[in-house]
Amino acid sequence: MKRIRLLIADDHPVVRDGLSGMFAADPGFEVLGEAADGAEAVRLAQALNPDVILMDLRMPGMDGLAAITELSRRKIGARVLVLTTYDTDSYVLPAIEAGATGYLLKDAPRDELLRAVREAAEGHGVLAPSVATLLMSRVRAPGQDLLSQRELEVLELVAAGTTNREAAARLFISEATVKTHLLHVYAKLGVSDRAAAVAEAYNRGLLTPQTRNHPG
Image (tube, rainbow, N blue to C red):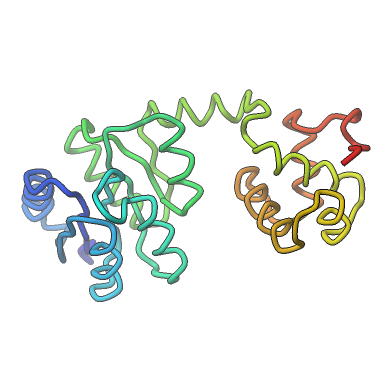
């Protein structure tokens, strides 16, 4: 059986040692290296090509979120499994949007953690129960705060049939900025184009027929 190759990124040596020892004791895993911050994690990921990176979020210098974003930008294929003590939406949502495959808490039992890494290695999403509950509540009742005010304004104009250039002129921003806002909207709504974004926004109640003709 092919061993799952791991990189562990955490700024606490005791945590790194504990995780390394736990995975090294299981014949299904191979620990390739350890990183004390996000920048080192990116560098080692590029050099060692792990299957899965266990990534802490709160680290000095480049934090875990910035590292996940950089890994995606460099198209490094390793799956990132966030392992942290924080399960609030200010941590969870940005990490998943940045490209994390899964999100676990450090109090997870050993067997659950081993299983989660195996799942992540196969490309399956893995979420701690409290994180899954949080995301479900956001999907069921996301409210207007899912999108920023500016993202909502851009989406309202798109729904009204304006082009990116027209939306930029109406909002006194650049066309490139409009495109950036739309990319964020797509990521947050889990869609890939303008029409799907508008449809999903109506489904979630972010847009209503009354907002269709936004005055700008």
